Length: 284
Length: 298
Image 1 (tube, rainbow over the protein chains, first blue to last red):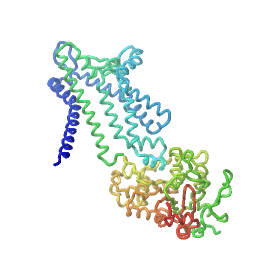
Image 2 (cartoon, each protein chain N blue to C red):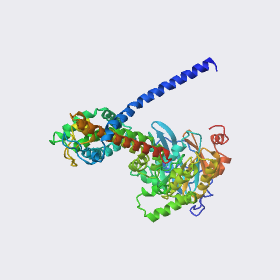
Image 3 (cartoon, rainbow over the protein chains, first blue to last red):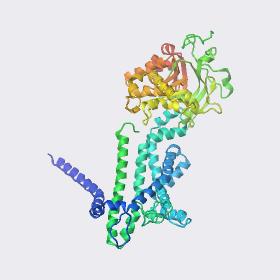
Image 4 (cartoon, chains in turn green, orange):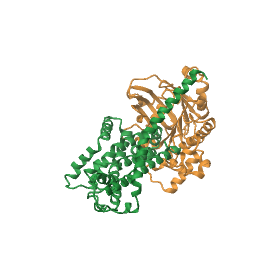
């Protein structure tokens, strides 16, 4: 082998090694977080952890059933409010958003996407907590919805834009009205992508803490009333982790494992939905 | 001239070029060069399915089709040929008001469907498109729907609420008309995208004819198909013209010669010549037509 060929191979090998090392470095935090969580939290997870509410400080035992149920309720509230608005906005942007109005909506969505979640929390507190006079799960759901809407709008827009124009034209040529083309042909074809975007958005807001501190507040008792303050996993972790008791720290780790598992499941579900979409020829 | 109503589908007495400028059409715009002798008679009104009068199609300020007047007799196949960019697809898209959906697309003049202007005031383009089916260059089955649902889709958007039985019957009829029934009758409820390209295109034809339109517009329907698929579509044209009036845009002159009764030649947005296919291909009246047919340009 000539000296030049050796040099080339060496260079190629070095570069490959460097980018591989960087890639490992990128995923290392996730692996470390996982390892740490499982190491410190998994041992505290038992059946009681899922079905019992917290016990008064100082006692051992108890669980986070209230936080798990609360998280689900608050996130569901966020979805109920945020999904129709977000997906509808995305559909509008993709199908009718080439004018000035579309440009403005898109710009605002992008700004809102970059707004710190704690600002959204303060906003929700100003309008939904202060006038009412008490914290509530409803306000928490609204705050999460505000976070979800711009994410959903932009992912939906991208997915809908992937639908080829020929499909739109085929429907219109068949005598579909414009709105029906958008809903039954275009949106349905893009559904896989929209669902994926929805799951990613849910996964992101499920872990939000800051906007809920000002709205859902947290609740040490089991509560399903959306007009009352409600506990969520993220708030529980915040309370327990900043508290003075060793028992609380232990429970915080365990709650973190549960929250992480929840988010991971949603992410996997999103991946699965995407694979369905591209693996099967029926997609775009 | 004899009454044409009793004549066979292709009225043999209409051997002269088919295009005339109707008497009332010069009410606006500058007078234009005549494209055919003044003494040409139009066939009986009942035999004209679609007629265009000084139809121009534009994209913004760019003109794609210039003041075209011609008509399409009922139960005939008319081929529109011409080099790329000559405006033949745009012309076709004016016939079912699809052109106006393109970016910057608008048109002037009129298109008469059974004597009524589809560009007239108060006419709903959506309703017009239900009466004029269209098939595109690339097969466009709806990917989220089964074969059955694809064919039935045009029936479900109309004003009439069909019963389940009626839809079943219409789907079978349309698939038979699209020469696809035997191939798919056992898997009507499977995905339409699993079909081959040629089958998908025939599915699109079936979908277009399911609501029983009066006219079928085919925009280069075989451009993405192999020879076998192309042949099947061409055979279909012969079958379908018994029931529908067909306008087919094609790049392929042999195809035009094979499938059509009349051929219109477009060049640079102008209708150069229209006539019986046999005549246009053997004895074209215009120099440009001959040049194109013999492959000297385009």
